[in-house]
Structure formats: structure tokens, C-alpha cells
Image (tube, rainbow, N blue to C red; front, side):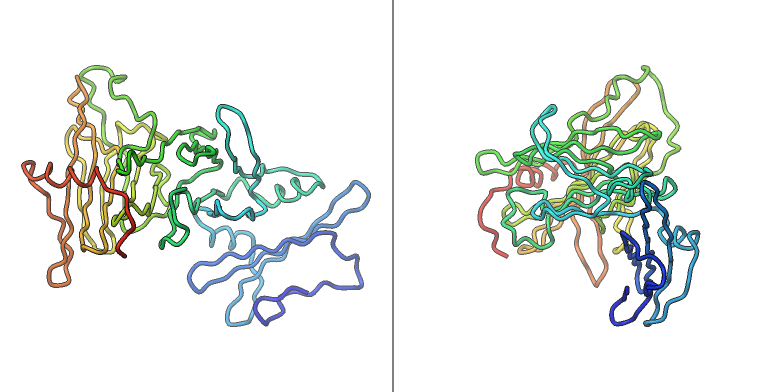
Length: 355
């Protein structure tokens, strides 16, 4: 018998052969819940299966089709991993490897057929539905374990390889049908000072472009700093690192698609504000958010490469968020003021937070 809360949604008929394995999937979005029940039967080396799918509303269930479930899932399924907990979703495999560097690996089980545990699980996957491992919770090994929200790494990833020291991560993201690795260094604490920097080990090299080449900006990418989810494939987000009195988040553009064609907008959808839109020869590389809850300070730093067709240079714009009459305003700090703020933003002292 399978129940949802106190309601029976399916009962196995004892007159027929009992299933050898049963897997129940619950999909939730808002107040809507859909449940898929997979039954597997083994006969010698042969396997058969059946699937029942329901929508559950106020204790009532109604049968739905595979197409309805797929439509409800939409863009994909995100499966979280908590580095402090060995329990993971059955679709995720984990191991310890010594290849390239010592560390733990989490990866998705392949789509497959067969009657082993792994192939049974793989048979429930569909190439039509995008499954991702995200977020990775407790990514910060400096975390006290009581930080709220929990530090996390968010990406549309199929595989993670995290070094033993926790500071180096390889993330595999699908590009043109292949799993492509991207390497990241978690920004370091040096002699008690947190040094924020670009976490992508190998940023896009604009010098590889043909001199004088002016790409058409026909790919639009939105970085929404009100959220740390993985809704944009081009963005990997390191969220909620607690450093002294500050909470640090970085949104990083990874070169899944050619970044020279990307037009990046930095927005805060909760504030209903467009903070920055790349212009002319500026190409956003990563965005940082520095939040100091105890002092009420909130800074957004947009880091970009200026490419004039000859020589790339690095620059940034700094915005300070203020709320006036219940309206959020992002002040574009003038160049003469920037150094005053970046001096302490990029040299945060580590000590016990005051809140």
C-alpha cells in the first residue's frame, strides 16, 4: 500500500505477483503535487514494469499521463547534495577518486536498461527530461555548521569532483550533448583576510579572438541577484559564504556558449530593478554581492572585460543598494569613490560575526 500523507493513492493487488521493487517519485511545485509509482517484476533474467501516475489534490488523486508529468516538470529536475550527509538521491552515485586530484565525486546514474539496481534506476530516467545535481549544500569548509542560509554551489551540473581540502571544484555541465568540466577555486582566506576574486580558473580569453572582431550580441543572459537557483545554464553561483560580518555571493559566467556573443543583464527581480546591462565593448565575467546584515550595507559589484577588438582589459562597476520610502535604489558609485569601498570589500577580516 502506498499512501500520501493519510490518503491511500495505490494498493498492490495481492492476487497478482507482488513487485520485486517499487520506486515512488514525488514532484512538487507550489501547491501542486504529482506522484509516479514504478513497479518492477523479475522473472528469471527478464524484467517487466508498470508505471502509475497521479496528481494529488486535497487528498484526492486523479490519473495523469506521462506527457502531463513531463509538462509539469518543465525545464528539469534539481537534485541536492549535502556534503555533511552521505545520503543522496538514488539517481546520484558517489565515489572517491585519485584521478588528477584526491576528492569525492558525485555524478548522475546513466540512462540504461537491465535488471540490476543501477539499470533499474537508469530505466526511469528519460533523455527528454533534464536532471541536474544542484545545489551542493555546505560547500564552505569554513562554515560553522550554524550558518543560515546554508552556503551552497548552484549549477546545471551532471557531475562534481570536490577536492579533499574543499577549495577546488570541478563541475561538469552539458555543452552540445557532452559533459564538459569547468574548474573553480573557492575564494581564499589569506592570513585571516578574505580575498574575493573570480572563482573560474580559466576565464574566457578574449585575446583568442581575431583582432578587430566585433561579435553580434545575440545571446541574452539574466543574472538575478534575488535568487541563487540554477535557472540559467551559463551561470554558476557560489552562495552565502559567511566571512566576518559579511555574507558573500558570486555569480559566474561560464563559457558554455560563446561569451563574446552574450549580452548580460544584472537584475533584482524582487526589487523590480535592472541594475546593469552590458554596453558596447563590455562583457560581464562575474557578479559579486556583499551583504553586511549588522550594518545594513549591501553592495553589488559587476566585473567585466572591456574588449576593444585589440587588447582586453579588466574593470568593474560598484553599486550600493539603499531603500528609500520602501523603494530600492542602486547607486552607481563614481570612479573616485570606488577605491574607498573596494578596499574593504576585498579585504574582509575574519572574526566572529556580530549577528
